[in-house]
Image 1 (cartoon, rainbow, N blue to C red):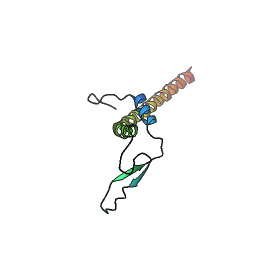
Image 2 (image 1 turned 90 degrees about the vertical axis):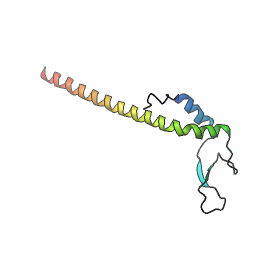
Image 3 (image 1 turned 45 degrees about the horizontal axis):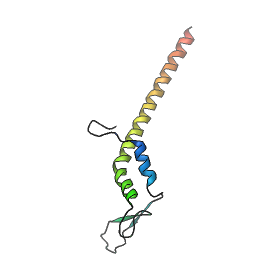
Image 4 (image 1 turned 180 degrees about the vertical axis):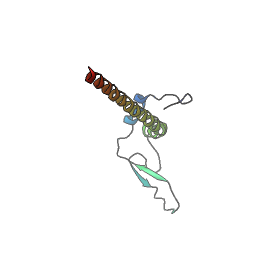
Length: 103
């Protein structure tokens, strides 16, 4: 989860950034420059042969670097809270059943 030094992200804004980018699927392809040691790649569908990106796609890539980990941490925290609440409901149901059985 975000801490004091990490400002909360607006997930609605993040979703809008994702939706403004070129629709997927994206694939990663080698540079093709011919140098055997070259490790550069292009993201097919959004990078032009010279590496240029549309502003919406560049923003998507840049924001995804922080947005994805943030959203994943939020999802994991939400799943943990759901599990905790399910356990609490189960315990309360067991207590209720025990009380009803005694009555």
